[in-house]
Image 1 (cartoon, rainbow, N blue to C red):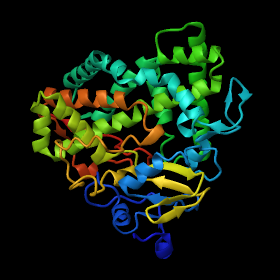
Image 2 (tube, rainbow, N blue to C red; image 1 turned 90 degrees about the vertical axis):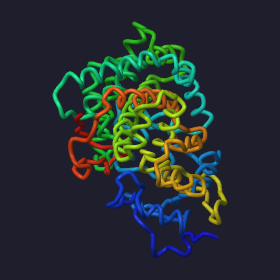
Image 3 (tube, rainbow, N blue to C red; image 1 turned 120 degrees about the vertical axis):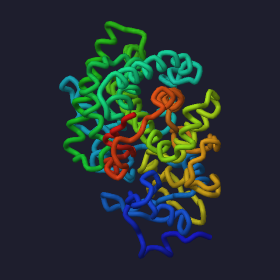
Image 4 (tube, rainbow, N blue to C red; image 1 turned 180 degrees about the vertical axis):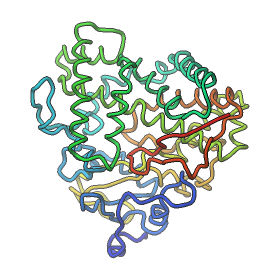
Length: 422
């Protein structure tokens, strides 16, 4: 049996842990040590509480699929990721729409349990069905080519984040939602503050208020002037009494956040990783095999696992797992990054292997709450990885990797900027 909190009480560590000084893409060394020695143990988080930390791949899948593990952020024992997210995971009484104070509730359906989670998720799941997303391939390809054309016509070096990685998913999600792309600076600047663990609770609430007001007014307009987009569909649900205005607003915010930040970071970090593996980069650049591109996407998702603070939950009943008992009311964290480096599931897990095709990875989570937008993220990454390096075959970093500012302080791992040239 593995060691648990009973034998390691004196060694309780703070979470999240710091990454090592070696490879910037590897999970923190302390997580690897816990995976090996104490895969179910206690850690200390920012507010002084001590949730369980579960590191093994199979244990995480078991817990994330368990109906007695709750994602409800209004639960008083929910282990919020930071002060900012504690203030915004559930909508506090200070949030208003059109001057009306709203009651507290989870920010959006991803922070709810079934059956309400399932009811709201079904309202938009059709927009992210694989067939419907694949129909977007020509449009996404045009956006990718246009952005590359602009980069090639401009000066060098260029910041890949601002010139390519952020605009691409932002343009795609704006078209899908019906959000004017001309406002992208407004929502990108503000949504970028919320995932930072250094953002204060006050700033987070004020930022969320501004974004909620923006989406709310847009939804109101879509209600009277509907178009063929997802926000118009949500406005129709509000008119039918199936959603409150606040619920529809929060759903739009969630899609706007999730639709650009994560994919942008995967574009940039995936490029950085492949540049560190030139033989594999060459194979990606030269291949015409869509299966190899798909395998590359899955391997980079596994290898990077950019949600760097994992999935946070609360046990509703006692759960026996891995030799430990998680009691009802106790909180749990599943750090996805170390689970995707579990050698029991992925041989030589710290090696990048684009032939691996690890479709069983949990970079998008697992269970009923796994990422709704994963078909769209996969499509965007497949097009980027099969196009960017082929069209710019001499692409390279314009600075030493040691000089690149990583987002160690963010909920989603990435870099603030990436100077490239060719």
